Image (cartoon, rainbow, N blue to C red; front, side):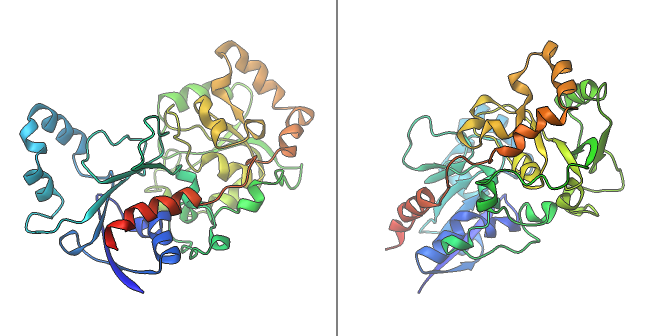
Length: 323
C-alpha cells in the first residue's frame, strides 16, 4: 500500500469524508495521510476562504495578483520546489472561474465536456456507499450530523415509506435564515397551512444546523409535507433537502430549477418552480386532500440505480500523476 499525503484548504473536517478521498483509499489501495499543504502530494481546495468575494474583486482589478507567486503564497506552497496536484472541490453553489487547479469538482453540469471536471451533486456525498466498498463515514460528519443517518440508495429506489397517514397536517420546514424566496412562499403557504419551523431562523438559541438540539429525521417522521426549497435556482444545485424529506416519508415541497429531473424523479415531489403564482392557491388547497397527495407515495425518488463509476475513473486520472 502506497502512502499519499493529502491536505485541504478553505474547507473543513468533512472534506476527509467526501467521495474522492474515500475512493482513493478503498479502490486504489492508497494509505491517505492527512497533512499540511506544505507537505502534501494532493491538495483539495474548497470555497470557504475568508473574504473570498472581496479578494476576487481585487484580483480581477489587479491581474498580477493572480500570478503563480501570489497563488502559491495563499495556498502555503511558496517554498516548495515540487508542487502538489490541486483539485478544486466545491461544496457550495459556485463555479470554478477563479481558482487555478489541475482538476475541478462541483455540482454544476459539465457543459464544456472538460475531462478534468467532474460533477458530484451535493446529496451524492451523503449516501451510504458501503456496498461499493467505501468506508462508512461517522454519523457526526456531513449531512448525517443534521439528518441522523446516511442515505439508503435502496430506499430511494423504492416508493416512499410514508408510515402512518395520521401524521401532522401542518407543514414543517428547517431554515437557518429566511431569505426573500423563502419568505415569499411562506407568506402564501400560511394562507392554507400552519407551518412548524425548526432551526436557527425560528429559534435564536440555536447557533446553526450543526449545533441544533434535534435530528431532522426524528421531527420529519411525524409530518406529511416538508417545505424544502433550494437557496438558489442553478442547474445542478440540489442539496440534501429533497432526499431528507423523501426518506422521512414527507412529500418534498421544493423550489429548484427544471434540471432537477436529471437527479430525481419529479413525480415524487412538488417543484414550486413549475407553477405560476396565480396557480399556487389551488395547489395548496389540493395538498389538503389525501386523494391528491397519495399518488406521490407511490413514486421512488431515484428512477435509476446510482454508482460511483465516474468518480472512480476521475480518481484514476488524478492518481496517474503518482505512478
